[in-house]
Amino acid sequence: MPHDPLIFDAEGGVPRLRAIMRALRDPQTGCPWDIAQDFASIAPYTIEEAHEVADAIARAAWGELPGELGDLLLQVVYHAQMADEAGLFGFEDVVRNICDKMVARHPHVFGTESRDKSAEQQTLDWERLKAAERAGRAEGGVLDGVALGLPALTRALKLQKRAARVGFDWPSTDEVLAKIVEEAGELVEARATLGPEALAEEYGDLLFVMVNLGRHLGLDAEAALRAANAKFTRRFEYIEAELQTRGKRPQESGLAEMDALWDAAKQAERG
Image (cartoon, rainbow, N blue to C red; front, side, top):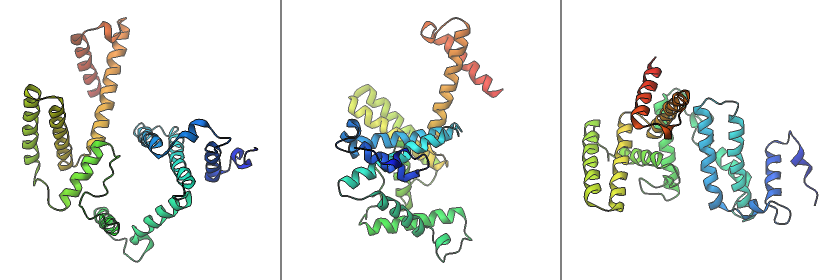
C-alpha cells in the first residue's frame, strides 16, 4: 500500500507527524513494535522524554532542544493516536482541551480581569481556578488530582503545598529541622532493630521531611538534587581525569587518593 505523500513532505508540520504515527500503527503495514504498544507501555517513555527536555535546558544545550522537544511532541501524538484507535478521543480533543484551559485560566489576558497584579497574585488566582476545576470533577479531597506518575520528590512537594493551603503545616523551619532529627533517629533505630520494609519506610519519611525543609526555605528539592547530581558528576570526572594523568583508573586507586582529589576538585571550583 503506498504511503501518504505528506509523510515525505519536509514542511508538513504536525499533520506530517500524525500521518507518520498513523502509518507506524497501521495493523497491516506498520511497525510491529509500535503496533504492540499501549498507554501503559508508552507512559515511561513519555516521562523519560520530558526529563530529557529538562536536561537539555539545564545544560543550555540549545542545539539539542528542538530534537528533545520533538521527541516529547511525538509522545503526545502517540497517545492521541492510540486513543483515537480505541474511540476514546482524538488529537483535536487534546488541542481543544489545552486551548480552552489556557483561555479559562488567563482571564487577565483573554477576559475582563485587570493585568495589573503581581506574579504572586496571578499564581494564587491560577490555584483558585484549578481548585474550581477539581471541584467540577468531583475531586473533593485536598490532595485529589496530584498525579501519581510525578517524580517522587516533585509529588511530595505538591502534596505538602496542597496540605499547607488548608493550614496543615509547620509554622517555621525550626519545627521542620526538629522533625528531621527525629526521623533520622528513627532511621538509625530501624537499621539496628527492624527489617528492610521498616527501614525503607523510615528512609522515605526522612526524604519526605527533607522536601518539606526545602519548601520552607523556598527551595525545590528536585532542582536542588539535580544540581547536586551535576556537581557530583563534575567532581568525579575531575578525579577520573587526574587519575588518568597518573596512569590509573578509579578501580586501581584507593579511597584516600580519590578523596584527596575530590577535595582538589572542590578547591578548583572555588577558584
